[in-house]
Length: 84
Image 1 (spheres, rainbow, N blue to C red):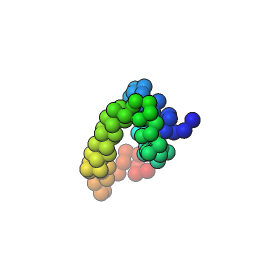
Image 2: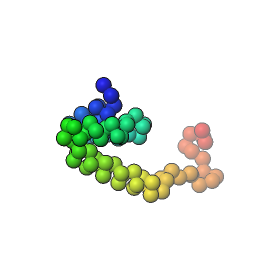
Image 3: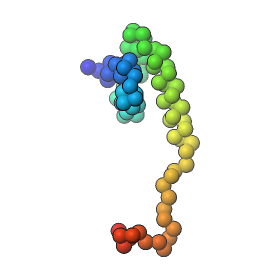
Image 4: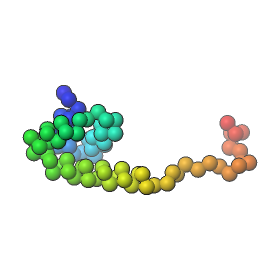
């Protein structure tokens, strides 16, 4: 089964874990978007795809705008385990 068909099934089911898998497929560049949109259109899932895409695009944009949360400890401070 092609990734585009798997993504269409996951969109149809619509559980959170399925939508997380759709996001994983998209971030790993495993899906041909044109092929997916063809499958989605043929199976009447275009609205679900558009809703997912809108949410996904918004999340991607928000992630690009967030500053990094990783902070280095102040210099001179050692960790509890002796700096290892």
